Image 1 (cartoon, rainbow, N blue to C red):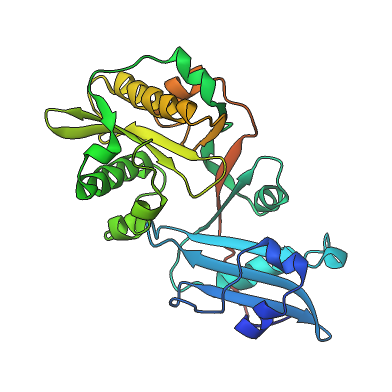
Image 2: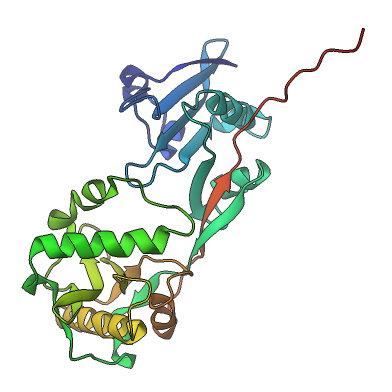
Length: 289
């Protein structure tokens, strides 16, 4: 295979199989954002892309696609090896997907191991009736937007600290679209001693809505009850609007969210985030003379 930087011209003319992964021109942001196209005898047979998250930056995200009639012949691995050589920093790769996705099977063939699991996420809104209310819970719209930004950043930082730490300037990237994406009236906050101690954020930029929930600190007293109250209020609001189902976004390691989540009897598929070791050529050794 021959490799070349992916260009906007390539993207505009991309075949449907190429569009199964995100496509950006090579170095669309900086040297940590690379994308390549692979050809054989002038025919496009593969495409690959790697980038660092503006929120984390501790690993390279990576996606590879191979033409349907050229698969199962090692081209994907060759593409991955080439991307490994393009890394500006000595970081490992990561990807994500449902447990039965081809991309996860490919990652495991490259030696991936699981770093995080997202439980089945589909929840019927009516299931919220099993949860308890809490007197400290109120609409997120009652808070100053700057306080919501701070609460969202604080929650995100500690819930990712053990497996994908945030970068130094992550908060601006994390919150840059929050005002537009957040349903502040359906979202809920628990306020304790004048501070936001827990949230349930409802994002209306998807169908069905996506909900996230946790405390703003790992050691928040009575955290599970506060999260429960926030979720109960948000689901009550959505019930009144006639919304029947939502998706939850969180992790099995979220200590206050997971017990509440399980009580909502979620359905769907398990989702994995995996770390993939980068290809590193073995150093050559000279034979003794």
